[in-house]
Length: 71
Image 1 (spheres, rainbow, N blue to C red):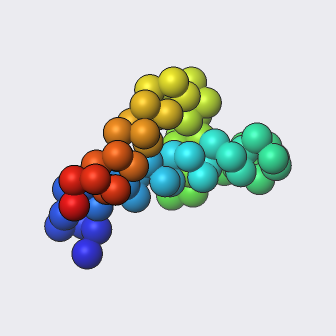
Image 2: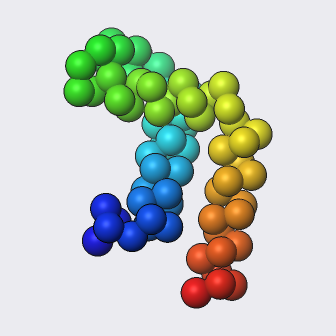
């Protein structure tokens, strides 16, 4: 499962960050009303995706390269 495999865990985290940033760009009120608590994780992932987008994009490209050509 993704919890015990480090590469799979990184892939899940990157997908979560990208998905939350996309959802926040399409419907900001959906994530903005839950800034605290357990659902605040999604808001925080969206903020990471927005503020660190060049780094997230590079990580996605590196992860895609490693999944396609290294495995």
